[in-house]
Image (tube, rainbow, N blue to C red; front, top):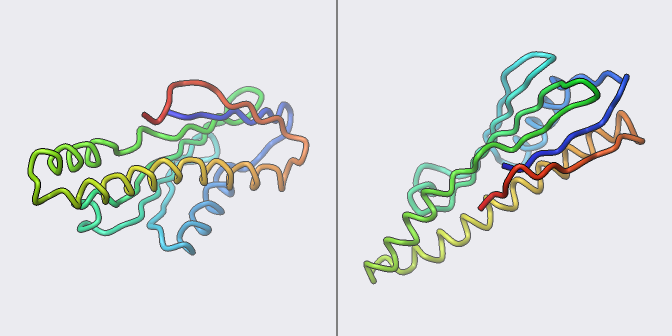
Length: 145
């Protein structure tokens, strides 16, 4: 999991507004996106790709948790869905006719990995729009691999 802490100290930020802005931006890019929660904790879900793309290992899907804490907001990207890409890649190695799936699984993994970075970049920008002097601290809670 990847996480960031936005140090806002005594400043209030509406995390539901942040979530709504992310949902709108990603829906405009063709993602299925939604959020649930309240002013203290919101879960935003993102998905791009059809069920057929999921079978081919091309689908990208992940979740973002925004939680109010003392002193700021903790943003955490949930465990990404890597199992499908690994299974498809492994199957294509052992069954030669499925070899092209190795490439689609690789592209899907690349797409998945980039989505987390894109979401954090957009979230950084949205928070900075409201609080230009915010301190953003990446936290090391593990990696996406």
